[in-house]
Image (tube, rainbow, N blue to C red):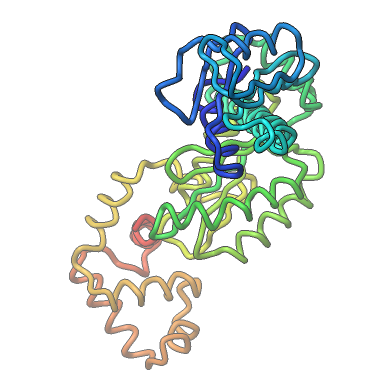
Length: 357
């Protein structure tokens, strides 16, 4: 139940409080951990006797037992079973007062380990389930079914994959800042299944029921954390088809590249699906090829021009320029690139390139 590292932590903690050497003795009478390194691994006769009789035994200066010095030896129990015998070295009259404290410290540290192990085990289980479902690689369906049942997650309802990617310049600081916020968000959404993918991505599984409200919550959260993260929600699918939802969430997330928007809901996307389906290298290569002849000012002008629906009047107003100046700039772009920003086919090429940067 207690590994060597925890046993050593126990004896070190007790010694720090009482100032005496401490031994952690197992039920066979072997000193498993000690603040006196020379005694580790040796046999402690009174420790074995205390374990066998389940009584506290004191050893005085005149007593002679194998591997034993004067002190107090206290059996410690956990969940009805003997955990260890804690031996406090020193005159019994002096160290007796620390016996109860040593027992309490031992049980507190053991309980802390149990809680940490349980939390870690649950986290690892959730990570395994999420990864299995989004990759569509379900090798042990019975384990998945039993785990979902234990977590009271229905396998009959439709669900969606949520992807959150940290975009802070500092990955460590970004994740550290985002993690507590995201955990509160997940709790508020009632989302039991989520995991972290190193170095910068959280993946969760949302219930599709009540998705309109969840969407509003996610959009508001994204807006509040626009400099910290980008997030996207995939299509609704059955729980055993969530690899489809994961792929659509990835597409939605990719569609945010080069935009100031940081939240995408796959069902709301049209043109963006095309953008998000193209890998980053190809997007960047296409954008460079189309826009390489243009200055930053001309690229910004085209962005406004298409944002304003190719309206000359609205573009002039937004850029504070005369109509003739705008016409001249558009003509120059056409000459330099061989693509006329006013013509539909060429406009589509420019529009795609602007969104693929």
